[in-house]
Image 1 (cartoon, rainbow, N blue to C red):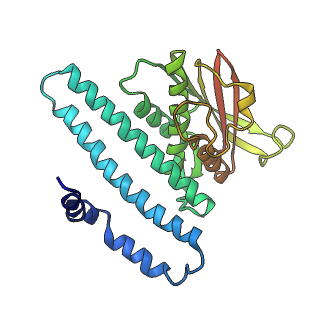
Image 2: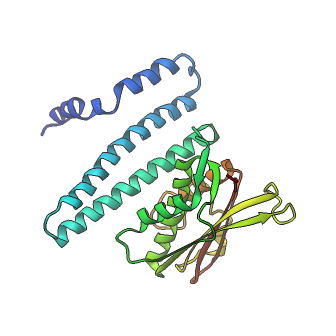
Image 3: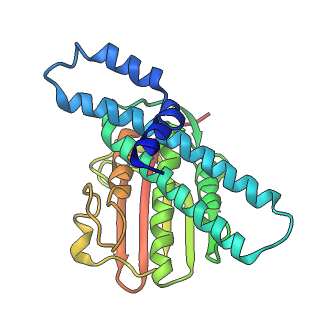
Length: 269
């Protein structure tokens, strides 16, 4: 196919799917107000494109899931290819969500409601660890562990932390543990948190661990000690926790594993 024909095909078949009316509305509403503010305009365009690309990837992921379900006969090679496609799709969706949250920051949409943290953490782990051979242990002190927050952002928090643990285990180790409990925090215990009752979430692995020299920069945007990755995941986690008036801490020992501890204010119902 010639470059001209390929360009025409893209215009006819692909570009109309990128919600031209959405992009057009954004341009019309903001073109005058945003004159002289190129950074804000870039954020608007990036936000629209991230949203639309995420929609496309969700369609692809749904198609992969349906193909795996409908596959009548077990075919090792086909299963492997579908698993590879699924991982690539899920990683792309995660990357887009991380970029979206990083761009929006505190100005992003925050839907505040009652959220069962244990349920969100369990579902995130199930999604991340399905079809894997990792030993997974989930422990919670109480059935109901509610916080007031944004469920989508909390899902992303656990997705990033579990994904981080999973990647550490791929190099060394075989186990991920999630423990959820209630903790009373006093001013003397944690100076950055308001005194009160909190939900403590510990996500631990017995993977490669983190070098002490990297701990200080671990939550910085784009910092990564891995050969692959963007360095956005933990930075996004920090932002999510701070927006929920909580805290996050990491303890790690090279060669033995890592523990991420998240504290979120508990609400009583």
